[in-house]
Amino acid sequence: MAVHIQPSNVNPEDSSSRPSAAAPTISPGRVRLAGVLLAVGAAAWAAGTVIVGDKIQEGIQTLDSVTGMLFVVGVFALVEVVLRTRGTGDRWGRVIPAGLLVLLPVAFLVNALSFGYATYDDFPPALLILDASWPLSQIGMLVLGVAVAVTRRYQGALRWLPLLAGMWFPVSMVAQIVGGSTVSVYVSAAWLLGTHSHIGIRLAASPRIV
Image (cartoon, rainbow, N blue to C red; front, side, top):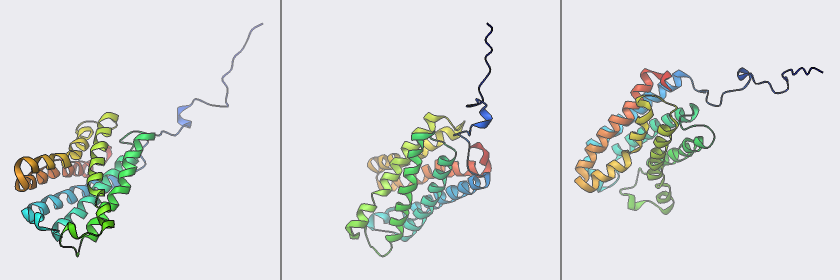
C-alpha cells in the first residue's frame, strides 16, 4: 500500500511567518539623532576637561559637571541604539545595554545634584552611594564593547569602536597613574574624541550601518 506524506500546516516553516529577533526596531532618524548627541556630548566633555584641567582636583567644577551631563546623554542614546539593533546579541545579550540604561540616568542625576557642593567629600551618604554609578556605568560600557565585538552584529570599524570607547575609563586611570592629572586630562580628551565622537559621527552620517 502506497503511503502519501503531505506537509502539515499546523506549524508552517515559512520563515516569512516568523518575526526576526534581530530585526532593528529603530528608525534611521533616531540613529542619526543618537549619533549627533554622542558626537556633541563627547566633544563637549573633552573640551570641558581640558579647560578645567587641574582645577578638577580642587573640587566640583560647573563646566565639567555640565559637559559631563551632555556626555551621559550621548552615551545613553548610543546604548539605546545598541539595545534596539541587538548589537550585543539576543536574549541574555540584551541585559548589558538594558542595565546601562538604568545606570546612566543615575550618573546624570549625580552630576545634576552635585551643584551646590564644593567637593565630593561634601556629598551626603546617599549621594556618595549614587556616585558609584559613574565608574559602574563605565565598566558596563567596556563590557558592552566586548559583547558588540564578540557578537559581530556590526561590521567594519563599528564592530571595534565600542570596545575602544569602553576602554576610556581604564586608559584614563593608567594615564593618571603614569603621567599625573595633566597628562590624564589630555589622554582622556583625545580618547573621547577618537572613540565616542568618532562613533557618533559615523552614526549621524550613515545611520543604516547598524
